[in-house]
Length: 463
Image (cartoon, rainbow, N blue to C red; front, side, top):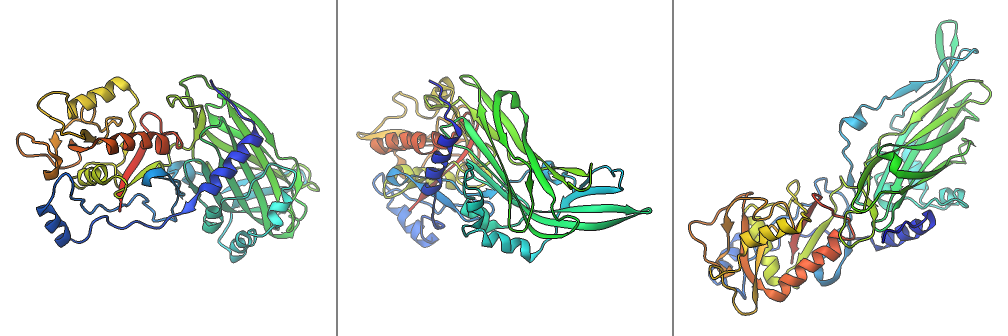
């Protein structure tokens, strides 16, 4: 049954999610040097599998990683990484002006310049001043990682949160004769925070205009706004609040909106959230300028996860990653590590696996890699494991290629085993491990991070 919780419920869910994010350190190679690996290979066996050294380079930007530790040594990551919007963001106009009014006045808004005062404001907001100003609204505190990145004029995002701090300037320009003269400026930080929940069809977008310098006729500028979205917006119901507010050095202006998805079973909807923000000089009639906020990463809502309630996520951020500990998965982990070391995808950026939900195609992958016949006997207590998984488009049938294996895998293949990015690896591993590994991939990664059909994810093995 489809559910749609209200904005207040969403806020409590996000609060719980934020508390669950804890910093985890970088994980080094899971094997020692080449000498150790070579000596281990000589005694390789089903009970002593060789675990090759595989770099765990899942974050292409070496950012601070945060993750949620799951049971049995599996970790589903939730790191914030730069949201590369390509030409969509770079094409944003840097200066927009209102028409010149009857008094010869125009108001302009543009990207601000780097200034230590802008960064100092971000650092100062760690105190209670900014949060207290939002009392009575549904505003939630910005993520710690958003404050840490500061005014860098780009978005950072994980699977459920997008946040960015941008430097902006509003100028009041008067025509004196034919010469435009800037008679006042307001420099401000623009904070934009978008958040969702994997089991909720309502997502939120809150913004803040926080001045750190006001001069001349820009004093008393009024700001108001309206939340908008592009693409499949008719499938969203919206509530938006950004009443007219006066900008001062001690008072920030706030806006917030909530979008609730109204899609149907099996549907997937993608939207691009934005705000139209208006700056008005009340004493200068008709001098109002529109600032359309920098395009943010797409928000996706769906009811496409089998046996899971609808929810929303940021699909273009690949932070759904599974980490399998060798202490809990010695044979499964060794096989995955060896398969990746042979060139198969899934362990390193930018070569992820992609989820496949079609059950018939999954079975074709299983039948290709691990046929149920005498050609591939299962020793007592062992089952056939394939990598890439049958539940991925890189699987044995859907991905193509030929089979490979390891000396200790108890599998005999005709000819020379393949290497490289195309193909699949098969191995006889502990049957209990195999079953648990598959179920945890569902419960710790696919479900909580809303990894739907064709979504990318990574798998890595830790010591």
